[in-house]
Structure formats: structure tokens, C-alpha cells
Length: 337
Image (cartoon, rainbow, N blue to C red):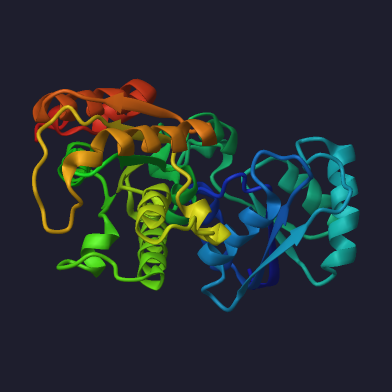
């Protein structure tokens, strides 16, 4: 059989998963050029433009693959229904007159090919090799984590911010939680950028906020279902107010990067540990109240974590597993670590 010249894969890709990527690779190997069409409708649980962005980052690396997009008013997906498939076939034939083969894992692929007068090459019928669906992923992404490519993982990863006043154990807790859950973490960037001194002006405070947000964005695709972040932009805001008497305006991308699913607010019921990069411990109660107020005013989900050093570490882990039970299987105690 001669190789087809232009192939077509269509879908919602809500979200894209490894089964979709295997279908695209199967198709790419069997045609000269491949079009991947993302179909979207208003109000869907994952915005169409985001799905397009994901697919382009995953599939556009090969020059023979082009990812397109439509929000045209068509019947709800070309399911295994001849009437719906005919409407889609008419649309696709007009939009892509040079397509001569369609690839799919569904029965509608045969209907589309019939109505378009082209070839249908099925891939993994019944989803035996990739037993997952977008619906199942949306319902419980953590349970189906192994099917998700990195950009989609970054969307679904649970972000936990370890948060609170100075000398409450945030750095140690963040690192130990990451080890316990076998995942990635983001350190406090103030100490990375200025290890020997406090920030001297507002430009340096902004540099901290930007570097921290960039590190969150960079780390998210590498994390395994959950990631831990040492402090956030609200922390920077509080100390910015203290040091320079003004409230900063953060760019939207910084705020978005700092959108956490859970805050662990560390109590001050542990001894103060002196450090040249810390203020005196005399303002701990004031700061704790301000840290809590920031969370409550923003309506953010948080848990108060107190007790001695080991007790608060244990309670923090329990809080995370209590919210997302599927994470329990990846803790060190469950893999023999």
C-alpha cells in the first residue's frame, strides 16, 4: 500500500494523554503530513486554547505534524453515530480537501472515512494498550498520573505551600516532605539569591518574587502528583511592607504561578533560632496573625501545623494524605524507603 500523503487525527484531547500521543505517532509514521485537529466548545472543563497549547508543545516538534483548532458550531463530537459523523465529515472535507486517511481509536473513524471517501486506519481499538480516557483523568488525575505527559502534569499537580513566620521550620519541612512523597520542591529563593544579606531595595524584592515564580513553573512538570513550595508571593508581600512601607503589585503570571492547592501554616510554638538573615523573634505573634489574615482574606485553603519539630513534620504529611489519599502509595514508608 502506498503511503498516504495527508493524514488526519481529530479529538477533544481533554486533556491530552499518552494514548493520544501514541495515536499521533502511529499516524505520523503512516503518512507524509499529519493534521491534528483539536475540537472545542465553550464551557468545557479544560479551555480549548490550553489544550491547543499542550498539543502544540507535544506534537509540533516534527515538521510534518500540524496542530489545528476549531470552535466551529458542530454536533457534539463525531461519536459512533452516522448522522453526527456525516456532519463532521462534510466539515472536514471542506476544510481539508487533501486529507486521504483518518486515524482513530473509535468507531466514528470508519464513518468519517466512509463519508469523506478516504481510508481509515484504526489504532488500538478498545484501548487495550492505553486503557484510559479523558473523563477518567479529569475525575481523578492523580490516579492516572502515569498516562499524563509533562505539560498536563503541570496543570494537575497539587501544589502545597509551606508557609509562615521566620524560624518555624519551613525549609526543613519542605525538603523532608518532598523526600517523603518522592517528588520535587521549590526552595525559598531569597536565600538562593541573597545568601549573605537581606534584600537592599524593592528591585531585589521583585527579583525574589520573579525568581520564585519561575522556579515553580519550571518544577511543576517534573513533580510526581504533588510538589512542595517553600514560601510564596504573600510572604514576599508581608516583608516588602515591613521593609519598604509599600504593598507591591505582582504581575498576573507571578500570582498564577503561586496558586496553591493547600497552605501549611506553621505555628510559632517552637524555639526561635537566631540567623543573620532573620529579624528578631519579637514580632513572631504579629507576623503569624498577618500570615493567617492573608490566607483568610483571599479565601485560601490552609491547615495550621504546630507541635515540636517531629510532630509538625508528621502532622504535615498526614494533612497532605488526608486531602489526597491517592498520594499515600507514593510515600517512602509505602515503597520501603
